[in-house]
Length: 248
Image (cartoon, rainbow, N blue to C red; front, side, top):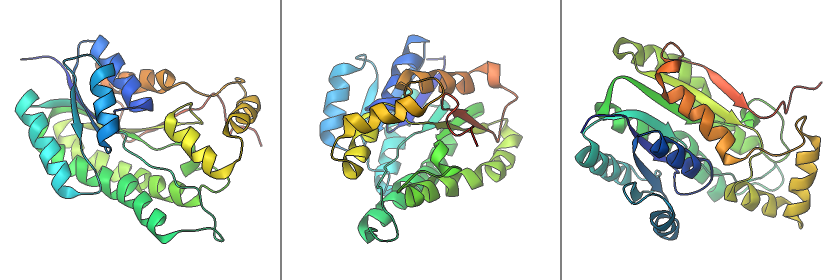
């Protein structure tokens, strides 16, 4: 079968799931991965029936290999790879946890890099790779230093990766959401606040647009970067944050 195809890691909820829905609506054949069995099972019920849903822990190279093999068997090739799998573990110099630190880098840096490397043979010439980073990689967010560092490490790779991939006209760009109303955001805030709902309301009030991003806001930017409209865009980071972080 011809037509656009997409693999979305971290695609069983939040931004990844919204992107899967949008790309499917636009005629893509879509595969998504999720770390947890319960999340994958829920996604199979909620996403369109022809979306391939795989459980894959990107911390494990064998799991990445298996997922890529299944996607290759189903689609043959990929025109879009959305590296969206990520975790957030708020911590400070006083509250750090070694296991959480290692997990953050294993998912957000190592997992993203190796998924790209393993999926490279499936990427068609002219394909698009999009990486979720987040504005915290370049802006101060309380308790976010480790998560920011893990995303920032991959962000720092993107200009060089863009050059490596350019001979095949494969583009790689980052999308950096601001605070977005997702299950991961809510879980992260619960680690930092006794009232996550109140914290979200306060964050929304501070945004120039007066609201948090919705997953669909980010999905539309990903869809643009995946499309031929962005055929000459590579090595860039696009912030989707409603103006957050602009004020001095």
